[in-house]
Picture (cartoon, rainbow, N blue to C red):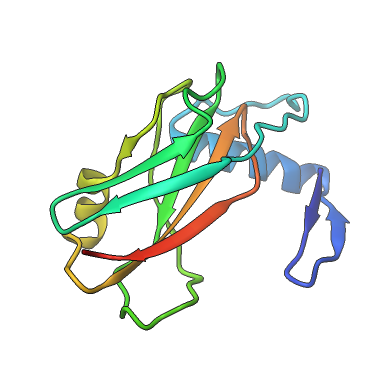
Length: 147
């Protein structure tokens, strides 16, 4: 398994690092862990995300929809920030969709449980990744001010 660090340099994971990476993702989404190495899988990436974000609704419409068989979308979000903020590094797990789920995903209940109801005028950063068999694709990130 090859990864890229913050400086753009590629490196290979050791067997233990790969084991932890796969099983940590499986635990995050509620799947059973594995003890044997799975086949390296590329779930792909989200082509687009459109947010609907108000104090009473929070959903993410994405393409391609529905997701492929066995592929799930994992959503990470930031706490509510000042509207003037342009960068975020504090993303936290919000929820994962079911396999082959259709767009959109309603994130309001899960976000409210973790951070409170979205407040008008605050900026929320969202990142979506595709997941399959313990592997995740590249993240698709965006942000929006709560209307």
